[in-house]
Amino acid sequence: MRSNSHFCVFCGADLPPGNPCFCIECGQPVGQPIAGEEKVDDPSAATGPTVRLANARTEQAVIGGTVKLPSSVAVPPGLWLAPDLPTAEDVVAIYAPLRAIVGGWSGLIEHGWKKCGEEWASDGTSRTLVRFTVDRIWFAAAGAAQQMRLVVRIGAVAYADEGRTRRGFRYRIGANPPMEVLDAWWIEGNILRSGIPVPQIQIMAPPRIKRVSDFPETVHRMNAREAETWARQGEVHGLFRMLNSAQQRTQVGRGIPLIEVSPLGAWLRLGGAVGRLYRVQMFHPLICDAASWKRLRQRIMQEAADLGLDMNTDAIIEWWLDREGYDGALFERDAHPYGGGRAAIAFRRSQIALIEG
Image 1 (cartoon, rainbow, N blue to C red):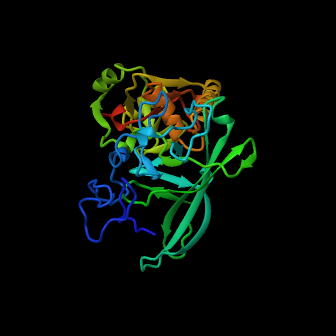
Image 2 (spheres, rainbow, N blue to C red; image 1 turned 60 degrees about the vertical axis):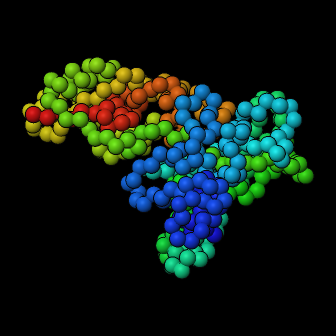
Image 3 (cartoon, rainbow, N blue to C red; image 1 turned 60 degrees about the horizontal axis):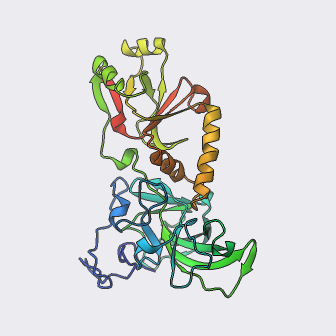
């Protein structure tokens, strides 16, 4: 098994010993591994542009499979239009169920991954190597490819310290081995069709939309008048309290939730009695009550399923909102779990201003 920093992120080949500058297999320059959890890296930088989802505004990165092949020829789920099956010379793309984290993605057992074994690592440490698998389905457009589907089993590995257990893994391009295609087979309905050649398969990351910690930004600081003028340039004009300045998981993916305060609460905070007040600036927020959010989630689920994605991770909601051009969200008090008034979900720290003075 390759160690974390001894493979090429472009083609997956083993790198020579020492600190090579170029891969001897494909000739691409070798980037440095991501050193710390808080270092933010653009995951597309390691592989360049890849497959673009239909109607999406962002590209996906190759994270395994046939990584030596140009991803521009790979066909994502739902976009194969020919009546015949893809051949062994064709390339298809399958999306791994991953959740965006700072500097990469994570795969968890509650998102479909299964822990399938562990062994002592061969790097001379007391760590264990834990293996995970997940099955994904590739399918053609309606009525194409003889209406058959391709089941792809993906494998990933993670290290665990002695005595520790893992319920998932983190994946960062340049720091972790590419994921592997362990097996693939065609099915017709629920029946296995053996003996049919399978196409070459690229494993793609889900759409990664830049949010919060993907930007090197901080919250603004303004006096009350400046903050009000600034917020009124957008569509959300209330005064808010912040629950936590750290990136949170919310109904609409990664964000920072703020709760609108009542006039009395605003007066107390502006008078210095309790807490702090904030303004937010959003130009095109998603505004929902409980009923409309339920209907919208169902619509997003259907559109994601049509593109080979699922709702097990925040990535799909983030992808859909980005595609529609939303820069934040505003939930009525019956549609969020935080209590109090309406909840604004900021997608960037630069959308928030702390009122000073």
